Length: 445
Ligand code: GDP
Image (cartoon, rainbow, N blue to C red; front, side, top):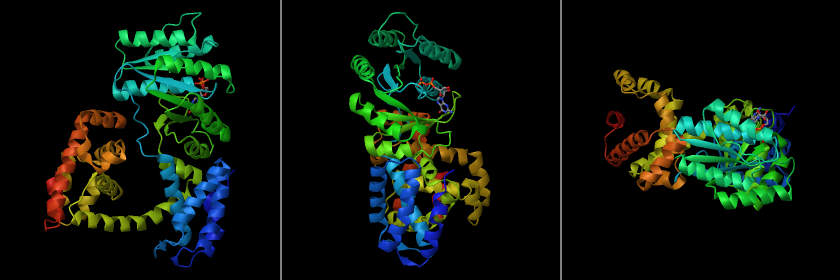
């Protein structure tokens, strides 16, 4: 249905094969096509315009390395900027659920997938984080909706608040809070009533519930297929109720996800999760990179970007070497190393390549160093904030708990990672004064 961005850019790229620096004219020509692609992916016009302007400023005049074409370079800038805007600063998946019972208020229009998402998140918190969860439906207009939540609760093995006829939404919210405290629940989900359209009565009700419930999180559930409408819904809800994040559903469909970009740009609120189907497991933390790829038209474009990325990585490696020689080594550096290891075929592949390290590969595997571990460690680092990554010394007990929970792992795993980082950082300090790779890797074991 959609012409892929790379197809669009094909012709433009051909004309852009001159090496050297990207001229303003080159960039503008290529970005014109990018703009059309963004609009087709449902990104709103002002957001697309603003986005293009920023990429233009960044790309113009930048050096084009020999191994890539200027067109690829432009795509890389587009991809990176998309990812940057979509991602924001905070790890998206870590819900604030400290100080139990923590209330999570679920809001959104009818049919957006709110009830389904509520149950999916409850299941996740129960299984991944070992939390005791209570579900409560506040949809007094639609008894069927209340029953739907109760049925899902049974299905996923999570308690739901008994249904009492004739209560108002506020009364139910109060009862849910009381029940959560008395019953020793960690988290209570309040699934508010949806309407087909935004209306005053709905907003008043949600506001009243919010005031009573004092939620730690107010998550807006929106249908990712509804494009521009979803953005309007998000800004309405954010203006009237104040949301802490968005869950985009139906991202398993063939919508292009441009709404995600507009929504972030318009509300500034993070997208926390995406719904990927009707099943109770079909939910994943939002991954900016993946949605950026989707907006750009996936497939070949991603391959293009990855190619460009290789050059970028060579430059990064050089920057890193410089940092190391100064004895600097924070969590960003560690993450880059872990990712690099994964790309190079994991621990096994990496050590196989180093002369004299073949025997160590086996030893490493036995000690539990494998790709799964690398991925878990990367997840832990992703769960940290920018500041924490730059300065791991900040990590005290409560932060550690949040980070581990965000990655769905135990604090002990995080402690292991921190210890490893400390050892490596200490190594880096010595690294400048000789040492060498072999010794460093030995130290890591
Ligand atoms: P609510 O009215 O907002 O509570 O919406 P529901 O939770 O009842 O969901 C409406 C329909 O959308 C149901 O049939 C769900 O199974 C379906 N649904 C919800 N989330 C997703 C999703 O991420 N992908 C797909 N394909 N269907 C979904």
